[in-house]
Image (cartoon, rainbow, N blue to C red; front, side):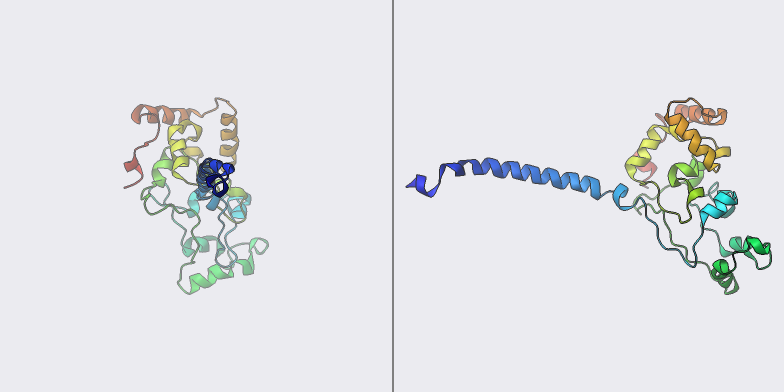
Length: 236
């Protein structure tokens, strides 16, 4: 009677169920590891900006403007400030530019904001979680880490997007291998040079500038194994 109620093939059910459970958990873990990460959700983030936006390809690329003309606090502050409308009007005051270089209607929203004594509500692109609490731009710039290493080739972006994940693992990889990104303070905003320089270094070329070599040796002698890797360095 028992053989009729429970066929022999049912003996395999516990094994099949166990394999299915392990397989399901593994799939869920791998899926979470791949999709629930900054690499998947945040890289490529490109919000719509006010008005006609701000074209870095023109300003930083074609015109060769230094990043620090607009982001004036990066050498002195934790934060890379967004420029005020007064900074924009330093170039875009009506009649200041030659007619062939005046974008006219494209910058009307800038002039309107200035006339109304209002700020332009630029949308932030690179934002660390609140629990990080500490990313000092000035310390990284002073250490010779280029804007390129975190923000990508801004000079080629008509619309800026998030180029790197800014995840904890990404930051730690840099701190463990400081020599891979340090180019020296005098080169931090020379983004085309930095891009080619770091690509050559990644191919194994020992082409670090004398300035960068001094900084790397100083960091290695003053901070064990490169940049700080303790929790309190960022989570304050």
